[in-house]
Amino acid sequence: MSKRATSVKPPTPASKTTAKTYRIAVIPGDGTGPEVIREGRKVLDAAAAEEDFRLAWHPYDLGGERYVKTKETLPDSVLKELRQVDAIYLGAIGHPDVAPGILERGILLRLRFELDQYINLRPVTLYPGVWTPLRDKKPEDIDFIVVRENTEGLYAGAGGFSHKGTPEEVAVQSSINTRHGVERCVRFAFELTRERNRRKKLTFCGKTNVLTFAHDLWQRVFDEVGKDYPDVHTEYTHVDACCMWMVKNPEWFDVIVTDNMFGDIITDLGAMIQGGMGIAAGGNINPKGVSMFEPIGGSAPKYTGQNAINPLAAICAGRMMLEHLGQRRAAQRIEQAVKQTTRQLKSLAAGKMGYSTSEVGDVVVKHVQASA
Ligand code: IPM
Ligand code: MN
Image (cartoon, rainbow, N blue to C red; front, side):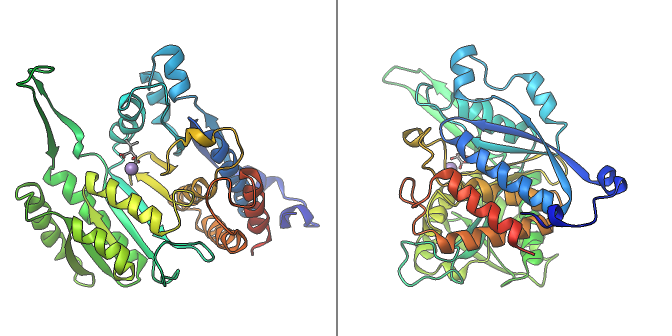
């Protein structure tokens, strides 16, 4: 039971009216999205109650089911409403009956682009008790964060076909890298490295030996911006070597900054070394606008409706959301509660946790309420 509930002093009307309320759009989405979001909301509401603020949830039914019925992905009217909220909490987008690209481009990427969420922030943290495929690596060895550029690069959608369907067919897909886009991402990464205050090391992950235009721009911007952060140690690694080091020496990393495509790829590797998709969370950040938080694992159609999937990734995404909203104490509570929960669980793999999805949520809630 929460401390407030057992308090002898009833809350004063003043504290009731001053309790801050956040408007959160919630998009449970497809597959197991709704199951994990349900647990995330439960945990976030518990943390909010403990710390005296409120979350007003506004659900939206965007996703594959809606598309199959109506052929609508993200209507302009919905996008207009989403521009007004304090944050968005997203489950998963992806449906087995819908061709690849339609929902991804039409919903997920459109939200990222339209809301100018130019950072995709993905922590790679090995929690206590969690199994990692990396032998001999411990939580203190796997604790870094990837800053992925989130609105440009190969994801920009620049390109096209000519002579489609003929033997002469040509397909071009260009990587767009603007100085403005690269600079704001790199600057965010330097600021974050300073704020984290761990090893104060920022690694630019690129491919300067092949992408001699795109990553030449990145490297120059990285060096220029770095001059404003003399306290931050900088480093460069090619993306292929980066994958190697993430497996062999993950303890070398503190913050990694990279472009959209490489960031997509290395954060799946990151998810695996931190115990799998069941625990990997991310935030699509617009520091001055509406940000969106999501587990990075997808809709997992195979496990839909079984109450078997791990909700910790969604819970950790919710933790990132509260931190972003400035509710640091509530975020800290959840972080501690997740650590206590992972110590208790034998496995994070779907169906093999020894707990159902909702039981894991209950365990986290219990720890959230018990922590000081
Ligand atoms: C991710 C996903 C998306 C991406 C897909 C679903 C478009 O893989 O969030 O990493 O590539 O960004
Ligand atoms: Mn991905």
